Length: 266
Image (tube, rainbow, N blue to C red; front, side, top):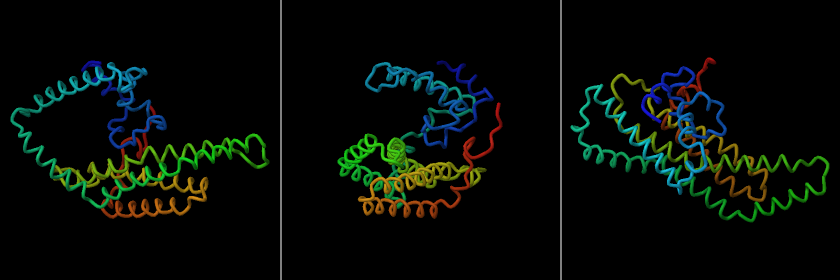
């Protein structure tokens, strides 16, 4: 990978500019991977199993090359824009970021999202036997071929619910912390409120909350004996969703490039 290759990809009209900025990073379930430059670069650099293995030297070598190339392009862009990188007070910026980070961490939405992540771990840790028991029940249904029973579909549905819960478990917290951090910083002159990064990040978090609520509702059907514990989680998520919507009232209307607007086929 070199700078010219990246520039050519950026100029390719098939890619939707910025589509990767406000997605949930679940490429396996995304219908826009063919139009995402970030996905294209990722596949080029980490497409084989060795390059994806963080315990393999090839992964870290690739990552090092990407960081070096990014730094070179950053310096070139700064020079073109007349920005003196050497004059930037990085210590002051670091201190400011620490203050913002601490404030964001103490925000009620961020705290609630972090608590949710722990609730998920606790539920799955205490419910390991539930999955083994349910697997035995479904295996028996397969053997008996009971009329009206579709254990294969139930297995897929259960797996899907678990996958969704686990995917968004920590991402909700990460996106909300980014959103809160962004809201604590000054809005650059000329930047519309609707275009604020904090609203985009919040929207991704809200989508994760919505999908998690739906997945937990499905889990309640699979494990009716766990209704009370699952309802506690659902109540927590619903309260979190309401707090987030109150704190970021414009987030739902934020238009994510390519994902929320109409994209013409190339």
